[in-house]
Length: 120
Image 1 (cartoon, rainbow, N blue to C red):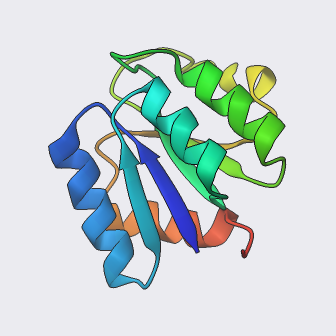
Image 2: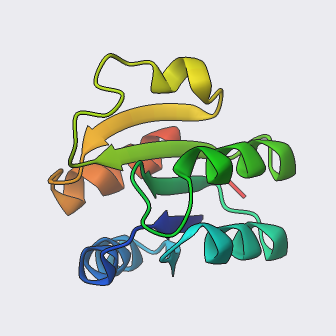
């Protein structure tokens, strides 16, 4: 399955990417809104791991574009802040399936990807 990681921190994105690849998933990384939307324009991703706070753009814009372009794609939001800690992200983004801390262990994140993703 194809996974898009949208994460400002390239090091953290690479850790998640390598873990997903070890579990036979194709994982691409985008560091900002523009590169994420470009990737979504070019390819279908079953699931998107999306940092709520993007330095280069808006996570909500990425999730909205994904919802429009690929209605079956699901989004796992990650954050290291208290934004949306009230669960309102699920009201704002119909394609949101999970909301977890950035510190979630890579193996747990992979398990969530496998649980929530729809097959290609």
